[in-house]
Length: 74
Image (cartoon, rainbow, N blue to C red; front, side, top):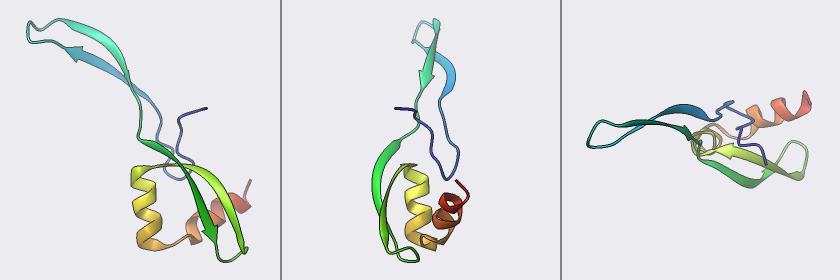
């Protein structure tokens, strides 16, 4: 399962975990990806998508029109 948001394009990032003794080690930070079923009113169907938490907030605020446009392009 790839951890990439289809709406915002968020994916993993690399960085350092720094201890109290200032020891650095590389780590991979994953985005907060959630699998959701969303009802598209324009197409009268459910779609399964992987979205970040920010994308879920965007959809709840602006509606599913942006998501529908994105899915029609695929």
